[in-house]
Amino acid sequence: MNYFVFFLGIILLLVTASDLINTSLSVRGAGFISKRLSKSIWSLLLVINKKTGRKKVLELGGAFILVSILINWLFLIWISASLLFISDPNSIMNVETNSKTTIINKIYYTGYTLSTLGLGDMESSGEFWDILTAILSFTGLILISIAITYLIPVVSAEIMKRKISVYINTLGGSAEEILLNYWNGKDFKELEQPFISLIDSIILHAQNHKAYSVLHFFHSSDRKEAFVLNLTNLDEMLTILLYNIPVDQRPSKNILIRLRKAISSYLVTLPATFIVPGKEIPPILKLTALENKGIKIISGEKVDLEYEKLKTRRQLLLSLIKDDGWEWADLTTSGYNHAINTGETY
Image (cartoon, rainbow, N blue to C red; front, side, top):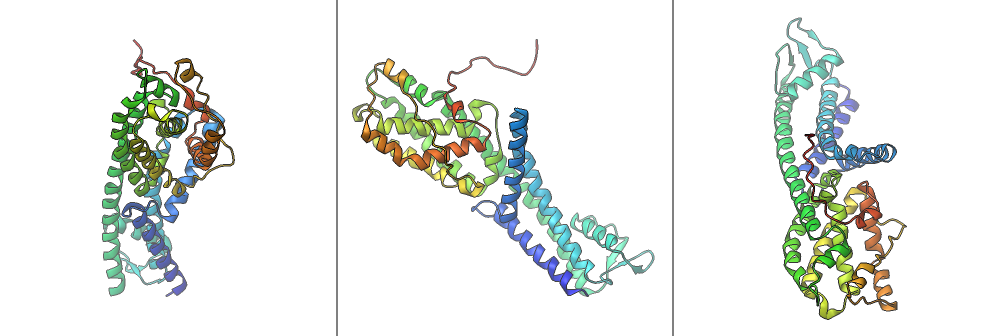
């Protein structure tokens, strides 16, 4: 037996198992391999999107990355198990010719054993290899089960994410538009009810994103469903309410802080997808429309200092937007389009 090849297979199998468990059965996000595989594929899709200008490319990203992760697990387990059998020339015998098998035969045997097919033209030779074959059969069954149990919650979490995004967008297409929509002539108290509804939903998505970091790579080119844009607009609006609007005109401070913390619980999960604050500082929104409406806007050195404290937070939001294929200018593309496009021509 070639012990180097055997232990190489064992190490690769343990690394793959660790990645599979950390990605699909842990609430801490993707494993080492899956995390880097996902980011590499997404970075490539962003480059393609930038060169072609077609956001539809990004819409395929989430599903493509999810399938790639599953295929990668199967491929790595297949390789590692094959190495175990390859390490011993006598591990598998050809039943029809009663002779030793080649490396290709062993790879083939390992593949159909993992698929739980069991064709019977080759069989393991010796008790140790018999037990290993049985373990591989169970491994294939477990892999299929994990794949199914991993796919379903990811899809459900993505639907929840889009639901939150659409809900935020119904409040307004930009931070300033939301405020204009909920100005009753004297204050913004009417925002309290939708804010309360959003707190639990955003916290739930934050936990989903922490458990399934692949959610970050599900992109929608429909602005109403673009979670990162609508969430950033919501956060920018909270900043305006907290620092640019007089206290007596704001919603309850307790509700504002709770919603801010809910958004923060999502932002702290972003480093798991390699998103960190960039060097570029996004511009501060000019509140001309609010002033034209007669709404008092607080400005000055004190407000500038508060915005300075939020610099890292806003840089992180900018990095998030760019990593999803958008630009900061897309935040201010307000106005709801009431037309419904069914994709059909009449």
